[in-house]
Image (cartoon, rainbow, N blue to C red; front, side, top):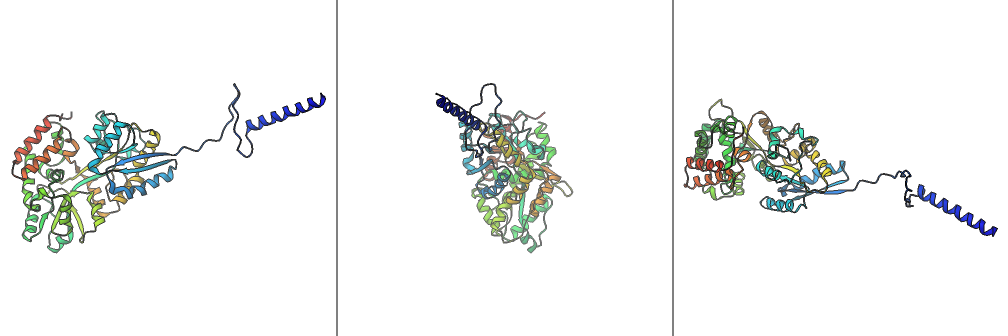
Length: 439
């Protein structure tokens, strides 16, 4: 019996040691912790490594993929627990794919927003997370944040890039024929006449995609109606598209038709680019984003650009500028905090500088200084004096949109079906259906 009691005592002692060891954890770190007794303080455990998450990022720019791989790598170095998958789609298919994902509530965390009315529609449909309190959002000027606001006035996106409507020109050709850069409308018309007399197409303009016509109009519109003074008046309802100044801008477009390629309404933008790149045309009107295309294709001549033209010598000629897309967070994301972390990066000067350098585009973020001399010149002109691409920034509403109505009417004018006055009338009739002047 005494022997049995000794064995029992030894067993109990060993059991207690085992329990204590399990509770404290072995030196090897392989033992499992026991449950904490009721009322006892929990034993502190080493903090677990943050779970890695993957954010899916939608874009309509497949051509930007290589640049984004480099840019995203910089973010991931500083945030190893967050991976970002850049998933671009064809621009023509993007809206439908995005709508399906947002409706389903899955598939996308970060999305590229169409500017102005496009962003407003998604914000008003409650698909996005507001970003007014986002760290770094103040790096973007208020005038550019307007491109990513909802009807409630809240900011829902971080503007990605600015665009300018400009006249690209073959500087080598200009030097060859002793041509000088025009400053006024009359000088521009004289330049076009000189080029035409030499058998050179003055302007490589495409008209098949009608939006290219309204982009070109935005540039000469500022010449006719004087920039922001007229813009503010039309937005306040103090005038409208039947204003003689606006009709004059349409007449300017009509005049330019004889300096465009033959049958330009039927040619694609890529064909217009080819005319310019092969030096059959001296100028090409499009956005500043085309600099990236030219840098890749390497034209056999020195490139330069002309901003908006003054109506008369000495008049101001503001450059045309607008936000060409933003990034937002889908409200359905499972990782809102990680998504906000990435958005903070997108709002940083570091991202803006990398984006500008990698893609030769103008960043809306303060403090970014482009390396490319032409891009730097555009940035400086935009900061000095700019006026908006009015049809895009404020008249993309309605069904069909007023912008679309205007573009289709311009095509109608070029094939002889409408007069400039009728183009203006149809545009105003569209705006009357939905546009409400700002107070």
